[in-house]
Length: 422
Ligand code: AMP
Ligand code: GLY
Image 1 (cartoon, protein in one colour):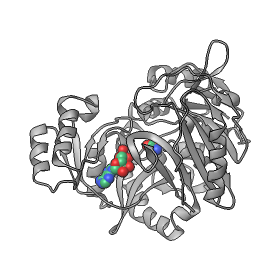
Image 2 (cartoon, protein in one colour; image 1 turned 90 degrees about the vertical axis):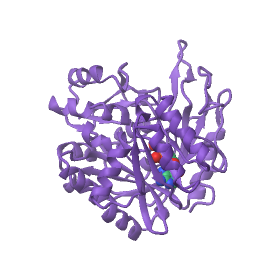
Image 3 (cartoon, helix red, strand yellow; image 1 turned 30 degrees about the vertical axis):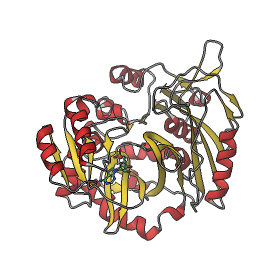
């Protein structure tokens, strides 16, 4: 089958790498793709958010399946438009993607269907939000832009002043544009965080798998929030009993809720959880794979990704195996020096970029210059990913060896990804 992959990051390179191993796949086209994805097929020069360009592209190339990597085109309705033209699509409709695209909508559904999440209130008016903040203990709340804000819309303030600043920035100064015209204030939860992923097709939820990501820019979880500086996955992150509990209290109920709300979910569901002393609670849902969680996760997927994605698109997930192996896998993101602040791009990349089964460099923000040389083109540039049958620490050592071998001006990575994990 011919597959169109939408997106150009490390997540999409990892998906493409996995798809290329499938006997079912004859051709992969990526839009817009990256130089890593180009090793697996043609690149089409259409941006991931260009819905008007992507729909005719899928038609023209006669795609048997479209796999949408990032959230933005899903929230904009790409999956709806493709399905309306009879093209099987992996990724939720715009209505179902509101699970990520509107935090107030997601919280409302969770409250109505009894899915564990923090207490929350929605505000459109800064002065009303400020009154609410002043009536709450300092450090007890979290302020979130309602809409998509590229991972930057959440503030965890220690003081009322910081909380008020976050509210005025979002509502009055439009720091996140329309996405922050509405804000959600949630009770602050405490506990370790865990990301859980499952394929979902209507009411059918696949075997889930867990990963942990590192969002802050610098070692020791310091610095600004980023899209993600690294991630790891291990069967020891969450026991089968705990995963079953998460499935029965969170994943199954949200899938059923979306069916009942008239917007059945089709794609990969990402639940961002906090493991509190009252049990796991949802701090966010995302409507796509995490990036960089996807990169190590693809090293643990034993089943055929193309078969799974087609089954999800055609409503046959219940009859399709989804098996995660017991490997441990670690992804270390090599970033441009000052990411997530402004950074320069266009620096030549050198070093060894392996593409083996257990030691892989996925491209995230790279391009080729006019001389055909690989250069930096984004904040998150490459993701050094490695797996081990034995331990997270063995996978971690390999991933860092690869990261050290990557050279470009200002290249930097966090040195504590998966430290101490098993
Ligand atoms: P998000 O962009 O929703 O992933 O949120 C970014 C980070 O904010 C999360 O990874 C958490 O560390 C933190 N966070 C979000 N919601 C809460 C909450 N209700 N309580 C405590 N921390 C939170
Ligand atoms: N790694 C966090 C995210 O993809 O949202």
